[in-house]
Amino acid sequence: MPPKDPEMRPTPGGPASPNSSTPAGPDTEVDARPTRRRFTAEYKLAIVREADAARDSGGVGAILRREGLYASHLINWRRQRASGELSAD
Image 1 (tube, rainbow, N blue to C red):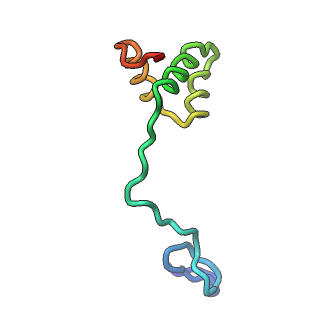
Image 2 (cartoon, rainbow, N blue to C red):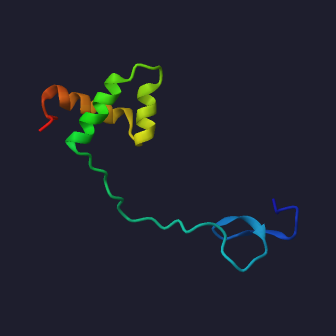
């Protein structure tokens, strides 16, 4: 179904916009392969200790959001600590 307003026409790569000569929308070019994050043993231990000390409801979730981490990171790091893979060298 065509737009009701004749001045509004779809533009390639973007939503309908008033007639203009500039392309719509931001540049969405991304790297072919994003860089994988790497965490040091010290960082992992610090986060695990902070999560262990969190007593408030939602405290662990707040830490994970603040640091941009997933619960699976915390689970894996706790397993590593328990198995001795993480140490405070």
